[in-house]
Image (tube, rainbow, N blue to C red; front, side, top):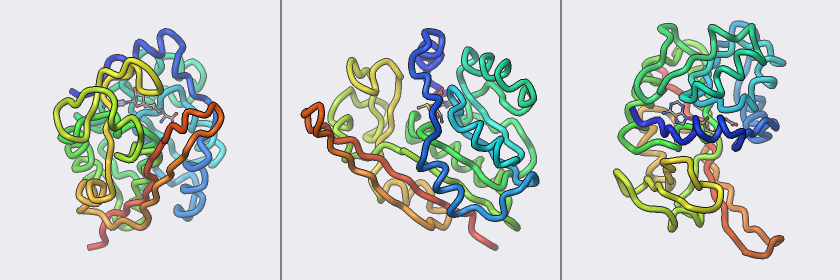
Length: 225
Ligand SMILES: C[S@@+](CC[C@H](N)C(=O)[O-])C[C@H]1O[C@@H](n2cnc3c(N)ncnc32)[C@H](O)[C@@H]1O
């Protein structure tokens, strides 16, 4: 179990309630996934406050999610009663609670909040749970980069890529945060074919702290046999 319980606390306190649509996620799904129809089985890792759910509902796909925070899942069940059996409470680094294969796994800044060994476990089980004859995509959005200023902050825990105990800034009070470089992502997804790997580096000028945020977006596809 590597789900950081701090997330449940954040949602109980109504903090970290991102509910705006994530534009990179929308662009990547629209650009890489076709056809998109009601047969498309989608699994979101760590749906949080449900920012991406209206987009998938509007696409009309067969949406599922695993989220570790009971507090936020209960809120989602009352907001989306039709998805009650499709949004499950659980640690996705332990198990994916559906047997059938998924066509698309979507992960916006969720698996990157776990340690390297937990990330490896999860990617192994996702690989087995991905369809091979149709899509078989894993789309990762906003995986923190080692070029992010936060990589030099916090305390190292468990392995060289994982940090915790941030006291200020975007990573305060959320438990583990994992940072990747390009080789690390290639290694983690070595069983997959990486179709695209892009790094966004953003320098803040106003307020003028010149803080650097950096994150990876990528598309990995299960290899055809
Ligand atoms: C930064 S939030 C992103 C939420 C959502 N994906 C979005 O785009 O708005 C990360 C979410 O992943 C969940 N999470 C992280 N690790 C998890 C794990 N091992 N099992 C289940 N949920 C996890 C957290 O509870 C949190 O809700």
